[in-house]
Image (cartoon, rainbow, N blue to C red; front, side):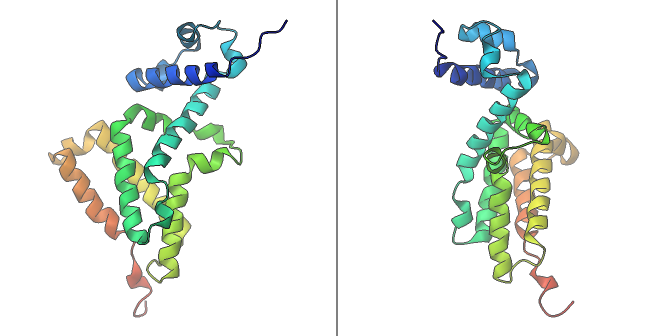
Length: 202
């Protein structure tokens, strides 16, 4: 008689993989070690995840959902410009509180091949930013194509978050982390509002 697959095992495997990632980085994830921790054979673990890359990708989706939960609904905020400011702060806070998951989240997403279900999970932050910028553009408050603005905003947030986590910015300017964040947000909050290019001529 064939033994039925235990529906709890994939969850436990992901939990172990996340714990390892949080403590030592996703490079330290080892399929055999996780199988032993969960109480299954090294062969059985591949019944649930076909490879280490597959496991890490599922963990990416889990990390993305954690980030998405921090900003969910901001696309409906009554003030889209304020929503972008909140999004930025939540994005950086997620990176600070979950540095190893953040590193994993921004690694090679799905090897460039995403399903219709996976894409909105991994790119929810970008889509929320784009929707906010589209609302601003519709009100005459944003002159750049919203897709470009969302991409550049993401570049800014990721670059700042990565440098902040590495400690490079503190070394460069001798400023404390909270001071650096305030300086960044003064620039970030003003950057997505280039209305002067559409008002009063060229």
